[in-house]
Length: 181
Ligand code: AIR
Image (spheres, rainbow, N blue to C red):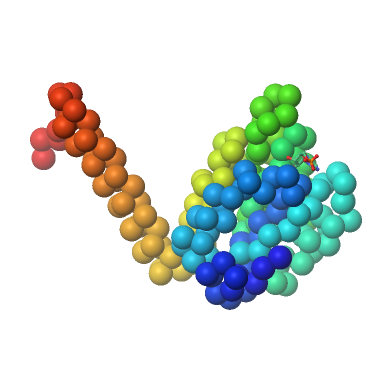
């Protein structure tokens, strides 16, 4: 667990990141990097829906009291974790299906997206760790003008990067399309 101070972000965690296993850590790394890029405080818990069901409930019961606004829950295989947490909280839960295993994460993807009506989990693609964090940032930015401005700057930089790459392709001699206005 961290308080947010250790990773360059300050304050009580706004995002709770939950991993189904310590073995998921590397695959979830872009979540931490992206939240840190936006200076969003988070903490991390390792909790398995199947191996530590008691911790799922305890964790879920703790989130609102701790001021957590969004949960990102990542798991591979039969990824029940995001849904199990969503069943117990009122805040948005973003499910991050992790690849690997016999069907390369399709099992986790379906476990996360095919929730019964009444218990929504927002899903990103298999291994979509960066997008999971960006989605959490978007949720928080709806209530935070400073974060909204950072998000706008991030999107602008992304757009400029695409144009710069197109310019590089042109330098290589390809007839690149240009907008007319
Ligand atoms: N997992 C753990 N408990 C329930 C599930 N679905 C997932 C973890 C990990 C995979 O099982 O999220 O992706 C393998 O975990 P381990 O600990 O055996 O490496």
